[in-house]
Length: 134
Image (tube, rainbow, N blue to C red):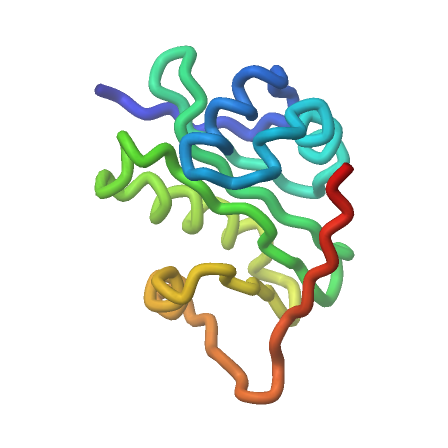
């Protein structure tokens, strides 16, 4: 199996829905919104096994000072094959000249993963989320 990495913002609703629901993210229930979100993102790098979308990282940035990594997900059937590592390596290259790259892990189990890429936790900094699901 050869994994191909692509820099594209064009996905079908079905591709995104399948990937997001594979990791049980509720945003997978809104595939048309995900399609538009990818198109409006600054950077999107995806992983493919043939024609199957199996991983994705997405970021928003201002081009000078800060970038926010918003999604990093890999289909569970493909986890453990360093796909997430390759997605991180590629997205981090996009931001070498920025002052900050931030991520807010929603799962504490992923903190060690991000620490491998130089991210640090701060005691007085945490995110709050308001959900506006229809």
